[in-house]
Figure 1 (cartoon, rainbow, N blue to C red):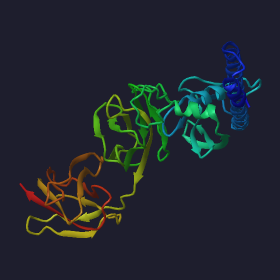
Figure 2 (spheres, rainbow, N blue to C red):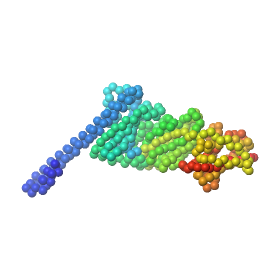
Figure 3 (cartoon, rainbow, N blue to C red):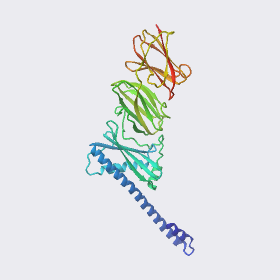
Figure 4 (cartoon, rainbow, N blue to C red):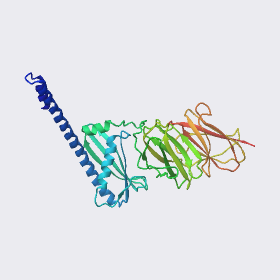
Amino acid sequence: MLNIVLIFLIKNPLLNSMKKFIFFAIFVALSGALRAQTTVEELQQTDNAIKSLSAELARKLTAERATTVVVGQFTYMNGSTPFSSYLVNQLTGELADIPIRSFTLASGGGAQWVISGDIVRIGELLRVYTRLVRRENNALVSQIRTDLAMNRSITAMLSSGSGDSSSSSSSVMADEWETDSWEAPVTYSMDVPMHRTIHSGDHDWFLIETDTASSMVIKTTGETDTYLTLYDADTREELASNDDDGDDTNALIRYFLRPEKRYIAEVKGYSSERTGSYGFEVSSESLGDPIPYALGNVNAAETVRQRLGSGRDLFLLTPDSNGMLVMETYGSIDLVLELYDAETYEKIASDDDSGEDTNARIMQEVERGKRYLARVRAYSDDNGEYGFRARLYGE
């Protein structure tokens, strides 16, 4: 309607220039007022949805007898946007305004419960997945789905952020576990994925403990280029580090974790400019029972042939004299060979391509009567048959 009025005013020769200017100014003012009213109505719809979400969260927190709660990050396309900040601030405000509640809202990393989530656009629908996590064991207690109709206000707030999971921008928000450090790492629960962010200048720290000796896979997931380092928590000795052995630009470390020993994993961006969201996970690998391998002399060495990944890729070696142990793999698969102390699970040596083609070969001084574990694994996701042989060159 306003557009028709404007065309009439501009094209009507009977009106002088001053009248046209006055009517045009009125038109602009009315248009601005209508847009402002529309924006307020759109935000009110969003605020009502957040209010309903806070009420549902409050009921669940009360039922769980939660004491301290923190509202963490809500990510969109693995990144942070102004809508993410708006959602967090509105949700925090709604929870704080509940007159009678059993929990206290915290602003740092000491809370027992964490509220966070993901924002996904599906056509003209915006879906918010809100997670309620018990920090003690990183258990997902509840997930709530909230749907919002897309409008201009939401679109503007979403498009103002890059949404790039590997952004060089300083707009990436600190996650709910900040501020962690070497002295105050985040305690990790085995086999439970954690979702965190790397913001400008950030290093994330995880405390890892296990009750049983096991081979562990420590890895990151997502699209952020990460760098992973594993330390002995008591001596601060660096045990292993990795950049890209995981999927795409993710990091991955395989390591035998000893029982009742503490480890710290550090995750950072590959460079200081690399920021964004990522996942962190530690899971155990089933190695099966080791195959007793009879070490013969140079001429009597036996070659064992089997299929990789059958659960029989671990060999137990016990030298009957001091000397030089030579282990080799054979076949067309790109293999990695590792040697461990069978009692302490300390890694002694590892090799990738020192054998023929892409096979592995290790030469290591060993002691009489000491037990060793030799492990064979694929460099990537290859599978198939291979051969393993070990020889002892005695003193």
